Length: 503
Image (cartoon, rainbow, N blue to C red; front, side, top):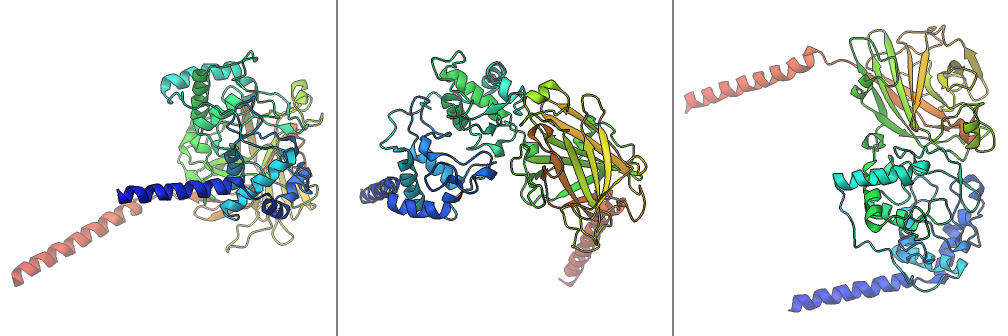
């Protein structure tokens, strides 16, 4: 009985403590806001801080009182304080909003919430909540039902396979370009891909954007509770684990094969090669800098044999950019369409130690090779370029065909797949990289989305990573462990016999 009373006291204390935190101290929140948040959200909370012009999505305008990711219904203006707390604590993936839980104390985050709600005069508690009580457990049947509804109601924006490639040009209420979520990349969700959170987005919509509420009785696309759970279960099932970017994964492992290398990007043999994923970031180190990317990751696989190397580059791109094509022009950022493109950068000479060329197109003492593929135009075929560079402005265009460099790409349902191929010892020695088995070779990537106005220095990129031509495991690798095992076993047997004789 005594233990029970103590437990109740602890729970009561926790409740009081939590309630006190949730109340928040506006004055203290103002002090913290003006140190930590003002740079993006602005002094008056209008989302117009000094950094705002460089961010997409733009910082939240707190004066509007609209909160995009909330767990209250579409017809309830107030969010739950816990919705705002989650955004501050965990941040918003694939945006510029960082998580603050490692920097601010819990009480400080509640204080900020109390203050930012004053910008729109929000007071009190929400009168309504989303009803999560009728959750449909994910199952094969639910996912099948959800898929049919998704194709009918959601594919026009999110694409048939959920890669955000529906082909619509979307803008929010503040006239900022928005992109439908790529549902195959759960790590890019603003909240997460738990079906409960997806259900909340489908039920409430995303206020201020073109993502509608599917619980609104006035909507022709209204879905029942069960149907929204089915769609949520289907959307969660679209997560593609092979696109996960693993922390510490920095090496593209080229697999050695004895026969010919795959020529085409859709060759099923590529599935035998281990994929490696990398984040793409905006190019902001050289002029003209770029701050509004649409692509966020790239995946690579590689094969080699005794003569050649082939590299497959895959990235999700919501739009196929074809200069001269009217449909591409309709969804373009500002009425211009350039080719989609990808490039791979290598040092001309593989470094013997850790020092690599400057990753922004090399430097005077350490030149780089750049292999660049560009998609087709309405009146022109795909192209491949070979460049040598010793800096952003010192670029020499060379004959890719003469160096034996080939590239071919295909676009299918929101994904580009491009194969680049060259001989291991191709081109000119001293001007072209010579690939060597068993060595770690620096490589870096850049991607252009032509519909998003990306051209020249305006693109996304990675820093240096590594390519490793993994040597084939010879018989020595298998024989030596067996030999050692038998040797140790023999020693043990001899020692055992010797002990018996002495005993």
